[in-house]
Length: 78
Image 1 (cartoon, rainbow, N blue to C red):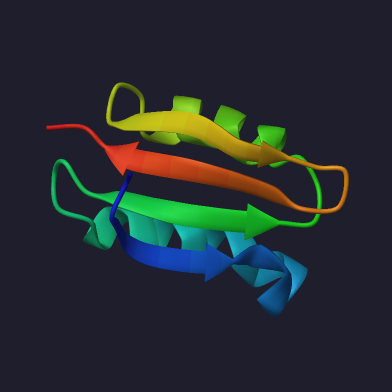
Image 2: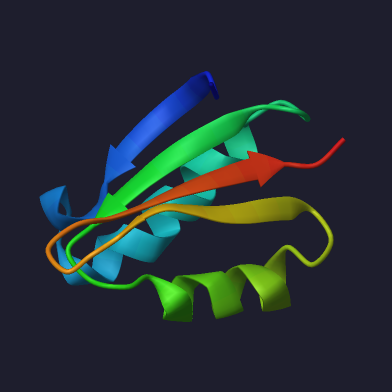
């Protein structure tokens, strides 16, 4: 079972703050650590943003895929 260094529930934040807060939390992870993202919709656009802005620096694994809650494990690669 994955131990999460941080957890974030995206709906807790105003829309314009969501992605910046998620990236801030990711950047604070140490290599080999994971954060858990919970959202009320598929965070696929965020995954594409990670692919552009943090290429080869992260892992992305869906833990739950809706229909009401999506949970993703985002890891920082070593």
